Amino acid sequence: MGKTYRTLVLKYDLLRLPPEEAGKITALLRVQEEFRKWAAEWAKSGGKEPPPERPLKYFAERFIHGAKSLDWLREIKKNGTEVRGAKPPLIFDAQLRLNNERDVGRGVLIDLPRREVRIRKWGGGTIMLQFTDKAVEWVLARTREGGKLALAAVWVGRSKRNHAVRLYVALVFKREAAPIKLERLLVIDFNALHHGISWAVVEEGRILKKGVLRPDVSKILHLQKVSAKLDRACAENDERCGEAMAVKSRIWRLLREWEDEAVKELIWMARKRKAVVVVDIPDDETMKKLKESNYKAEKKVFLNFGRIRRRLQGLAEWYGIPYREERLYSTICPRCGGKMSVLPDRRVRCACGFEAHRDEVPFRWAQKRFPDLITPSFSSSSAVLRITAPAGFGLSVRAAFAAYRPRRAFAPPRMPPS
Ligand SMILES: [Zn+2]
Image (cartoon, rainbow, N blue to C red):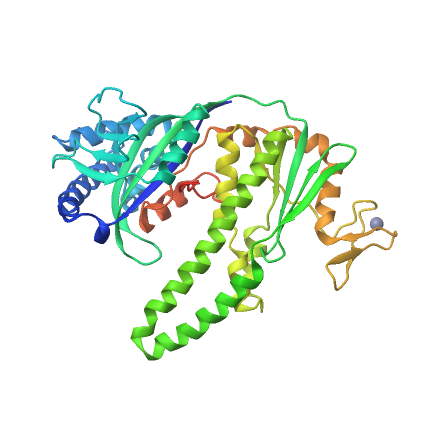
């Protein structure tokens, strides 16, 4: 099936770094700016611009090398002059030290026994950063799965959420995914998240197993109310704004943690049942309508599928499981094809006598379309070979990459420690 990638993004708030390390970041930022200037010229020239002098030469070589295997770098080249908005990170070669292997002098050394990250070769000495236990756990898990550290990307940027300046270190792991003999479908039906994500393991003749994954809706709704109140307080008194921000972060964290757990559970199931992941997700148009409708403001947070979808796709690809997105009907009768009427409790009923919970209908349709859905299409197998930029390259970078991505619907896999 080919190479697949997973990325761990480490984030360091500059304010929390030890002063002697934080002091080096300004110099690193200068290198980054210089490199980006060169990269823009290079892209504009269609790859003809000669490599720059040291220390930028090192980054230029890594960048060009990386671009051969990683779409999120290659896109820049393909699109030549349109690259002006893109801001590539500094790409380093990297070594993972699991025990006490010799330091071979690569740009980034991840030293697990010492819980350290060392960034070198950028022309300003060594930046030493901590490596958390959680990150160690993540790296060990990837290593056990046969993943190898392929490269590290480093950049200084602003957090999208609170605009704090951070140093980001993305570790890209590479793995050869072996093909799996597929026997079933894991159908995942995305609803507004307060209704939950319903899933079913589907065989040709039957639905083997099904369930619903739901975040802690009442807790989140409660926090949303608190947040709205604090927002009003913040509008009147600046001193309350910190609290308002803290509650928003908490809601975001709660949802994020739930999403990570849900994705893990789903992918674990797909692996165990040797199932193709078939995701039924509302298309952009439907989403737009939903968001613009008089959907209660505090429930809109449950309509953000972007992150969970990226995680699901990224993790499926890592394990060599085909991932595909398909629209499956939920109000058209799987028995006779008639339009069903929607009853108040999210049930649907057809004139032919068929009646079911609305979330059940896509599974019936998947069952009907089983032979077609179990055959990986060309596009889904090529998806396995694709990798997109780790999130957090900074807004402009992400926007630039997003514009060039061949299938716009998919945003990059974002892989914080999990
Ligand atoms: Zn019917």
